[in-house]
Length: 194
Image 1 (cartoon, rainbow, N blue to C red):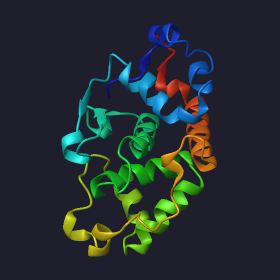
Image 2 (image 1 turned 180 degrees about the vertical axis):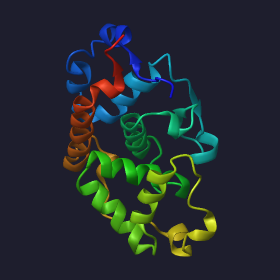
Image 3 (image 1 turned 120 degrees about the vertical axis):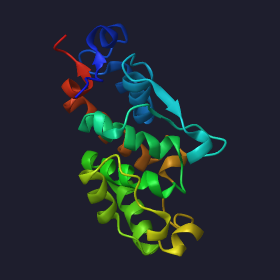
């Protein structure tokens, strides 16, 4: 499997060694900054923009490689970054990665709210996460598998305001948990062995 971790020399130049200090200094934006430092600034991971497909008028940078070529930690940080990069209502094919990532990182109450909204719409977040875990490259679910209510109002009544303000307590908790996840898994994100 190819190694897409950030080269050690790049991590040193960016001041990320030993404890992701630049990201720690801006905790309300940790998820976006982690993506910026570990993906956008990573010469090993070319990005492509799917904004026309997934979020017209917005930005949706993603690695040019299939998810299966990234390691587990990279997939998880990419998935939670999409929660900010592509704000709700998210496209159904993004949800398996997002739910799997949110569960792996353990983002807390925002995950509960997202999963509750998916259940209210008559769909199953357990099925989404399981499908991604088995085959991260599969474009699932198909449109036919989603109940129609999902298309009308999946998030409009949900108590999920955390993505709208960096100062919202749930947003701060979301970012803090993602940061701590990255800090624990630095060897999967930065090539220390070079």
